[in-house]
Image 1 (cartoon, one colour):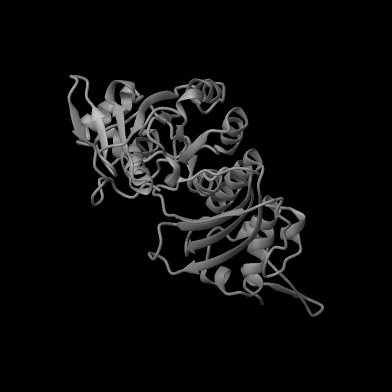
Image 2 (tube, rainbow, N blue to C red; image 1 turned 90 degrees about the vertical axis):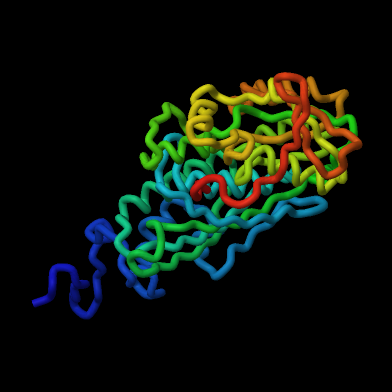
Length: 356
């Protein structure tokens, strides 16, 4: 008699046990055989359904709408816990890659996704993550057109890791990048700092505090399209993720060989984030964000772009926080609340446990 977990042979045809009866991921789901194909069909194909993916080839055949160039990005996502207030690893994977592509003034169009699953992971957990990815992709207006799945032994991963790659068409007559900041440009941040990092740390329950806070994870490509439509003088776009605002500004200053000065009183930080950082000895300037945007723009269009950002649901707390200077080249300074200046250096080492 066949075991109740084995496939059942009916007149020579092997009928797989429905996936919902397999409560956890097992090594066979990464074997390349029938179990893996059943997992892909039941969990991934149904959630990410589109004609390119449905062709089931080794690569997705797409036709980008580019007139000049393509923007391509890749990322790996290893957050713990997998779910936290305001997001999860799936939403993080989609939005993170969409935003990276959009930072060059591109229109994100297609994503690929690779899943490293740990043996013992609940299939229900995987389904929740995949559903979140599908929802985020729909909001961003992108398709997930190819992917891969691997399974590793129990204890070899934190439930799952996700890698993504994105491709998008660069909008015509667009020249945006970290090397284009110019003295006199204004620096805008689209909202409060540190929400993502502190939300994830709070969700772990390991640091002795609870914060009524949600991660800021969001797809920013629509906001970026609105900014570019409003002004032809956008020079730099950057999302201050790992390393936070301070590290991103230092990167831009070095790329453009300029100085950047920001004003402490203009940098928006939620009180709950400020309090958590003070308690933990963190600086909000270095805490990760996943739904915030740095805009460096010619001064004559700064107010116009600020108003444009504020009209977007993800930019209501936007602020002009500083400007680009000739000197000191490659450095970032902060004008403090008492009127002095201090150097804001790039993050050295690891200030926070892994959060993205």
